[in-house]
Length: 355
Ligand SMILES: [Zn+2]
Image (cartoon, rainbow, N blue to C red; front, top):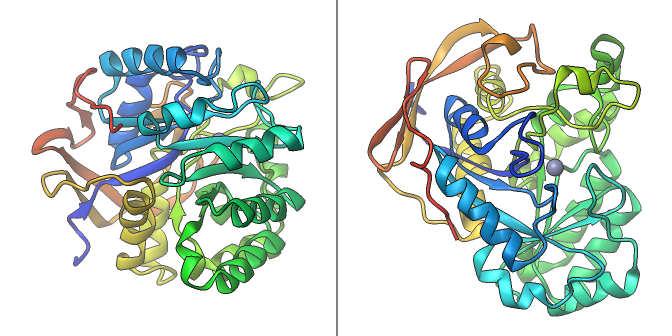
């Protein structure tokens, strides 16, 4: 079909758990999962243990990833109430600044308005500020970006009111509208609160799964969505089945099959899939796309998603049992065959730092 081959996916939102929680995932298994999912580059979030909030932590993380990653990688710098000013020094080494406006998994949370304003004021304008913002916090993030004339990327939009607010903001920003971008995840596009009964703790994510109305609103407003990113956030089955399950689901290997299924069903065009997973991520985060880096898919292959056949260390998927249409056959990274017919061929250390 027309859209095979495709550019490789750039997943701008992953948690590969390295360093700090490598029993869940590490750069080797996480980037093996990426390649199996047709993803050629990942942008990893800063909520490690310890979090990536200064130059030394970034250097240590880069060292680990350089030894273990099989696909290309970049990092976000985490904002804390104490590291205002680091951004101005470190922005050229990262994809963007990540601010957690509200509670989430891990130690990073921005609750102090003065520190939040200081981050927006001092962050260099060239790269985006990526925010975890839910509900009212979305309005706060948009207001701050406007007031300080900064680029804002709103992660994992999940609610009808949120996507409608972002549409309104993009319309009112006029010529500056490209400074405001947003992403949605496959789990918010394909699952709802109704699936929690079936999936139990495995369906616990931040932001939580929405209603059918929320899910429909994301599809209805997909024309103003800039990026689809996995928010790949693996935890072990034992952790998810514990009394206080941590939020997050794996997603690197299921994003593309789900989206190719949407293409097969006529809900998404092949061109739009490429924009959402490759062109826009490259533009927003200033990444060069290489013609020798691409993937080949079989858009007709129908099969059932199974956690047991995934490369992610956690070994499960919230999409277990779902029939999809579209399989990744081969992945070429800088002209090298990195994945073929179910085998990850790129070795740890093949991946390069993007920044
Ligand atoms: Zn996340």
